[in-house]
Length: 341
Image (cartoon, rainbow, N blue to C red; front, side):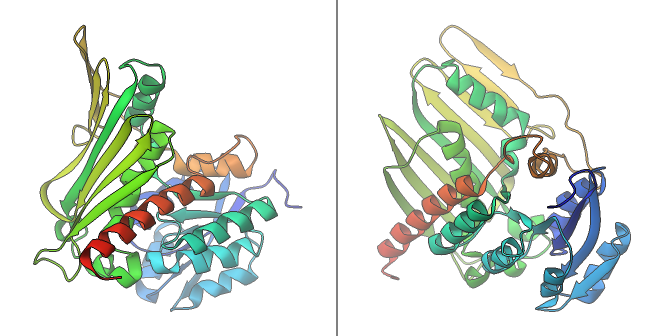
């Protein structure tokens, strides 16, 4: 049994933007964490990142991450192209290592189910990187919904869109369906998770459509309609090609509505409207990590769950599995309409 009084020994697989912007700045600031190794595809990139955070061991190449299997680790962060998530996570779980997986946890239901079951059998923490769960503006929205502030909920409507080339400097691997699962697994997984988390409902029917333009060799936008039962429905739209970046949520109830606009400030803004009242709630300024990005508490929750100081991370493997189920059903429906199955 590992000694819980010492630091949690953590390794990172991946050396891309999300690692540099989110994971390493937050892990390096956590006094309960010891960063012991990083594995990336290109040595030069991985070495540069390792030096920034004084990570002692560096592995590179396609199979460089497998060197981590021989190390004594408590936890691993996996932030690679989506196609590798399941294989890497399963290998680590089978070494009794807690796993934090960037979304999506997998791109097939079989892989997602297998990861959840492996973690359950071994008593390990399997967390999924759904950052909006840590944002106060969405936490307040959930509180308002479940305190009946706008009456029985009838509809959720969410939109996330941006210009992918401008946001990440290039389209790179994100537009390669064989590596990511496409736009629904890239952005749609965020909207699916929020709708499920806020509503607490299980989908009863899912319909979707993909739109392909001229910017990429794959679908660049998608639309999805989700029936939640009990006279509730939800819809979301995602896009890789719009300006300005758009991230909003509407929640419609029988006595009022909630609107969240993420584009305002660093943490967004919430507005609630009803015939009797209207007010705006702006969350406190978030704590910024070393790279200058808001820290929404995902790393702290993961480490606390490992130490058994809180019951679960912000998004568990079981919850991640439900989002994969929504996106898989949406993709199946959309491809069936296109006659591509």
